[in-house]
Amino acid sequence: MESAPDNLLYNPMTGRITALLDYDFSSIQHPAYEFLRSFATSGGQLCGWANDDTPQGKEAELLRNAKLGGQFPSPLPIWAGSTADGRLAIDWELAQAWEEALQKLDVKRPSTIPGIDKLADADEVLGSLLPWRLTNEDFLRG
Image (cartoon, rainbow, N blue to C red; front, side):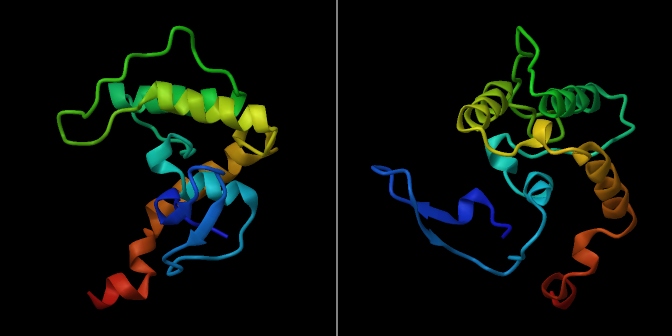
């Protein structure tokens, strides 16, 4: 079931999830789907291919390759906060901590899901052709 971490309540003493809020986009999907749609604020989201030669595009490609390979560059690139156009830059320390936590727990992650790179590329193309807001009734009504 897809759910953003911001929609989870958990007990900080036990680390257990105690509630799931906001079911509006919930669905049962392949585990890879979580990495394409969720985890953006926690450094865990995997992006598809992009033909972007800007510094932000090159950095995004470097992060994608780190997630797909399970190995982050050393030293990590420096996190610059926000870009001039207001987009968030990559928090490399957070992204690496996310990957290390998944490795430690030995759970599925982009580097262990065969074909996720192709799935992410197809998802990127589909998102470019038909942005999800054009198929979402709530956004279309607004």
